[in-house]
Length: 455
Ligand code: UD1
Ligand code: CA
Image (cartoon, rainbow, N blue to C red):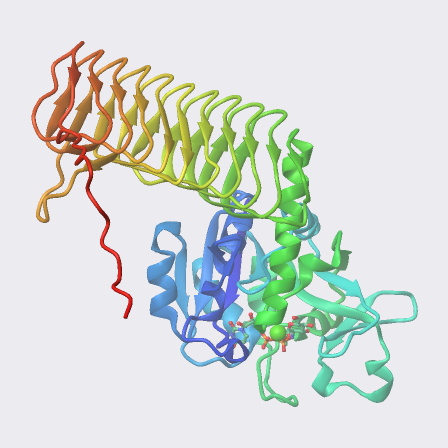
């Protein structure tokens, strides 16, 4: 029996003070709601129903790829009313699991425990015991420990407010039962809302089995209401990812100083120095070394490659044993083969560079196909843009390009050619020869530098 997941996400999130709906704020580079959907999906549910409200169209658009069932809750009449909006899409013989779009760090294993209890025919609630229970619903238990209800902060008596066992909001129940209980809710309470929490007292009144479970850690149940809470969860999320990387055999110079905004997959024995940011999908082979302060986005980096300090890599493939940086910028559609060296203050854009070629100092290489074993001298520039169009530069194998050369594209340089330093190359360079364009050096014998007249 697969669970049907209902995710409540209709809240306004006014405390974020943002034009962006709260559940679209990023955690690890992805919207809060997307994390919840991913966790829900890992339970292989019969369906995922997202109850949305304010700013809903923006949310639906942002997460259109997710393929979930969107359920509009026009007016927010309470959590019980919200769940009820999704019930028409749920079959009676399923188990319903209620999640929250703004509580992103809940673990699948914790949810499995709730689902299991519900499958065995119980209403199952996730509770926690807190030193500071303020604001939460409190769990009411009979003397024998049986759950009898949940009372909200605003409805609770002095005595009830001293209860430290709180309602996290997460629950699971057989769908047919939940449907019947939801019909019985009313809004005669301090907030005038249809409380989902009231199903506990209704079930208890029927003598129905009620189970509870607790989470592994406090972060699982924390919601995001403001940016300070978002920051706390971001740090925890990063800590979890860092733990995972270390478990997989990567050394982190400081697990507190790495940020992964997307997915980072690493081979064995990689080393990542401090303050690196990984975005999108990044894969590192084995023994890859990443120096401090690097930003790496949507890249694939081969075994034994070394990325030195302060590099920016945006979309590309970097071959094994390549050396990049320090201070290099690799831009989209770049493919660097094995043993390529890219040095300081070098920018590479939309270029293929074959094995063992070197561009070590102060260069711009754009729209270029470069062969293997090429040495590009300091300050060499491909002039790839004529103001309207981009043009290709083709460089053969084993070419030697002298320092401060301009290659005015479209242009071809033949295999084994040598270009003299300071050349402006505008026509095809033949293979195997020395080509240079340079005005002859002159010396004016006896020439005097002007001097200021003194009075
Ligand atoms: C709720 C619980 C409380 C629990 C707390 C945990 C109820 C009545 N109370 O209180 O026992 O301790 O969560 O954080 O359930 N939502 C909708 N539509 C609505 C109302 C709410 O989608 O009409 C969504 C909100 O977006 C939010 C979630 O449900 O994500 C919780 O709603 P909120 O009003 O914040 O409930 P709490 O007062 O925090
Ligand atoms: Ca809340």
